[in-house]
Length: 147
Image 1 (cartoon, rainbow, N blue to C red):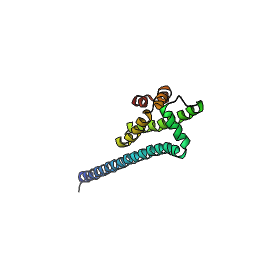
Image 2 (image 1 turned 45 degrees about the vertical axis):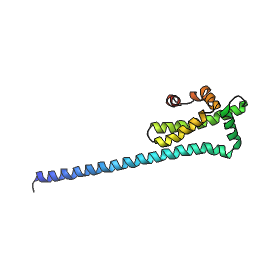
Image 3 (image 1 turned 180 degrees about the vertical axis):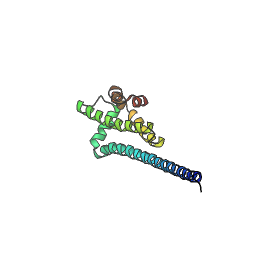
Image 4 (image 1 turned 90 degrees about the vertical axis):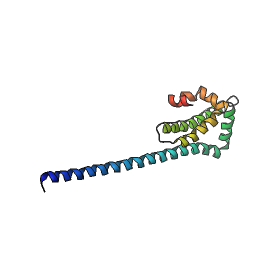
């Protein structure tokens, strides 16, 4: 066997190694993408359930949210600030979900869940008023444009 034949065999073995490495890398990237999507879903769900969990645990907060959702007028100054903080909390997790969706880590179906919460909140005149006075100043322009 001459040196040219040995060199050709070595190059073929090297090419097979490169192809195997590329296949392995593609599999790892796919697994990482799936893991990112799962993590985004879990995070979005956790943020949403944390928010609503506080309302379940604290009926007074739930009542304040429902009252403020209808109108900000009857709220005392303290109630208004508490409502505003709850609204900020809610729109913060919704903004995070929007970010994940725009980056492709949150699926369209999962983003639909967050959009449903946005629609529910903004159907209330009090939330629309809060968003117009305060909320839109607290978030990035892309999310504000979406809302």
